[in-house]
Image (cartoon, rainbow, N blue to C red):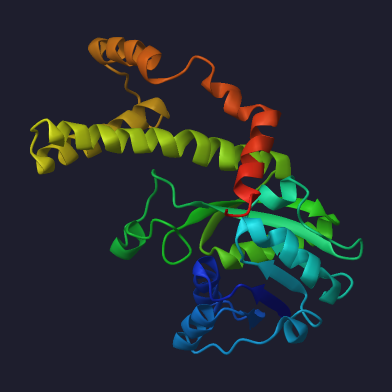
Length: 279
């Protein structure tokens, strides 16, 4: 049985992992939480937290479920407590990619991030269909990267990652730099603003008099078929009229140079913004 120290166990992500790992009998969990609110959330789950000094020395794997802008300070404090050969696991690429994780040479480092359940899936269980984040009922992919260590360390990290975010469809191995392209550049900097714009468009249609229920039903159905066409899920094409509007609208809605967000210097700036302490 592998021992896992979960740091930040009472936070938002920590509680999701705490709940999910109760189903994973092959891991012994040690929960570390210093905030009173987090300790209360653990108590509601029947979990008694321990100190970092108690949890980290015996741990085979240490999971940092703490905010990105605290990873550097937390890892600097906790890494000296980890035993040689242990694996430090981060849940987001921002700090590792920016070189903000403090790791001793004797300790390995692994990063995992969930993809969340895909839009196109075969879920039939109603609870799985409403599990949008994953890690409860719905299946999802994960992406994994080894920052420091051996292939054996990667295998240990992937095995734990599959448990943390179960049920997992596939674990995709990438570099930490590639993971940073996926998030923030692709997911947060590109797709989230585009989706927010769609929601603002819906609100504007309603403001201009379209009944709310009709507008939402119309948009949700069109998003469904547009995604299927665009991503090749069905053998269909946009109508000639739709293609004309699509091409004309792209020049109005998007800057010609928007793909600069994927350039290395832009990704680096995005990471720095994420890691900047709140003012």
